[in-house]
Image (tube, rainbow, N blue to C red; front, side, top):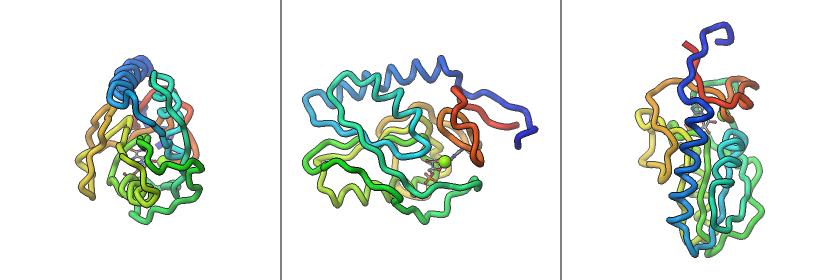
Length: 173
Ligand code: IMP
Ligand code: MG
């Protein structure tokens, strides 16, 4: 893959613009609520940090690490919580933030896990959505961009151990 041609799907300017819009929408929807944003590591660390800086209402931020893809491009469906959140989310409004929803297995697992902690609501935000790949009945509440079935990298998304730091979203042709 590394010696293939890079094709940029979303530039960092396009990403910034979309984050401003999403932040405004979320701030409006959660006005007066007790929002806790939960960033799924490692993939969403960049998106989450950009998104929360565009949210203008008070927001508590926590992190949850799930078992990752490793070097493979396909998810197994065997999701595991590696490190749980630290905050008490009982009676709180939770927004789960991930880089991408692909099969949806990760998000479904995390939702079920967090429901046991009795939050008053749970919604999801992803920078990228690949609806054609879905294996479970789940649709993100906030979506940066919807994309076809292409393997993408950059903006937090990895291939192998690399590319998470690239500030735009691209694929290898
Ligand atoms: P899901 O459980 O199949 O929905 O996959 C979620 C996780 O798979 C994401 O948080 C990513 O870490 C990873 N993933 C899915 N699609 C891609 C991709 O195109 N590039 C890089 N990582 C991906
Ligand atoms: Mg990943």
